[in-house]
Length: 172
Length: 111
Image 1 (tube, each protein chain N blue to C red):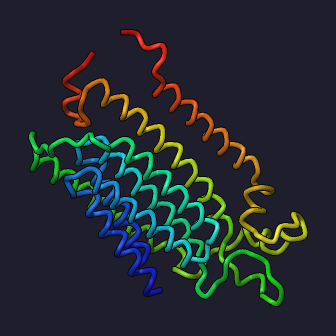
Image 2: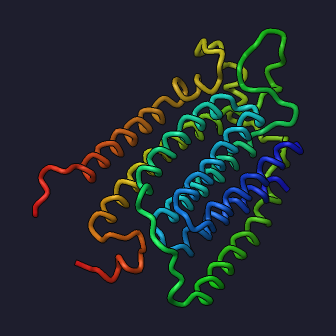
Image 3: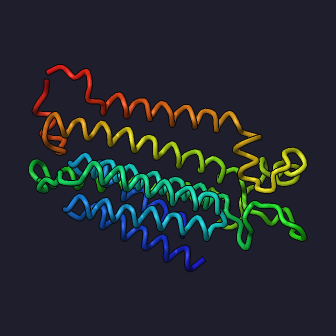
């Protein structure tokens, strides 16, 4: 468990750097560090499919964000009600963490999951689907409509990106 | 303890979304929040000394970690990529129109 804690602390530090650094490109690189740390954490939490997917998605995300930020830097501005904004944001975060502390107490303890629904999948999954990897048998057989919806969302987003970014048809 | 670290990561993303004025910083904050929530789901389904949910000979079935959060988070990661791509496209468009990523100046240049 100690290595997981270390990776989480590394992710928190990288997130702080990504939030506070002034250069946008460095910020994007720091958020890439958070994502790759998340991939390592998935590997330690025994989720190899997720680790692979997170790695690929993180690299694509970095490419997209670098496309948005390159040569488009702008100076950091702190005009306006700096004190009021910061204090209200910190109060909001404190309220969130306060309630989260009480919500965590009601969760099952770390390392002892409440396996009720997935007990059926664990026991009968191989006989019913023939797949040895349970994650793929869940996403492609038991909950295939979920995956269909995911593909729909993905293609809708692609159409949206093409519609927003196209050059032809602009009125000048 | 480890749940709480995960929630601190979430609140850093929340701070970034609420406090920063740069559109790219806001997108980064959304990404950090998404990572924290995904990690939280996997942490809830983790079993101590468990093994990954893949069948193998001469292993006990019930020592696996919970496969359902993993399947759902696999969907959520891909949808997060789609959402990020769409937001970045809109942000690039806003930059072309207004010449800035600062949300306070975008509000002033209405119309």
